[in-house]
Image 1 (cartoon, helix red, strand yellow):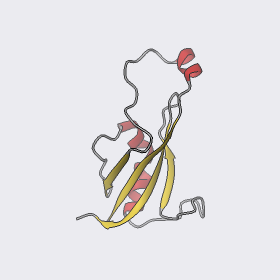
Image 2 (cartoon, rainbow, N blue to C red):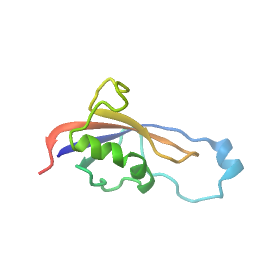
Image 3 (cartoon, one colour):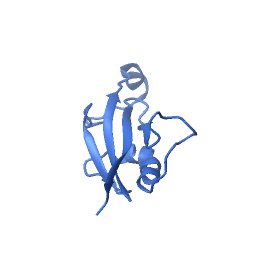
Image 4 (cartoon, rainbow, N blue to C red):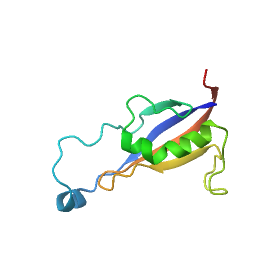
Length: 104
């Protein structure tokens, strides 16, 4: 099983949607652009948002087990995927890549 690198690539913030539809919350997201997480196989990395993990875990599991080429040519690097979390108010885009390192 392979280790998987997960990099925060981009973060959006839709204040107009937040103002119109979301109840006020004090804390929404701790991610930072450039932040890197390493998944040991299919295990959720420490500090990874539960909601973001739910959005990407199937892709991480597939890559960790040697799968590649999602959707027949979607990504230039067949051992990667670009996945966004499911927060419609402040989505975060993650680049998920297979590392050449096996999980010990």
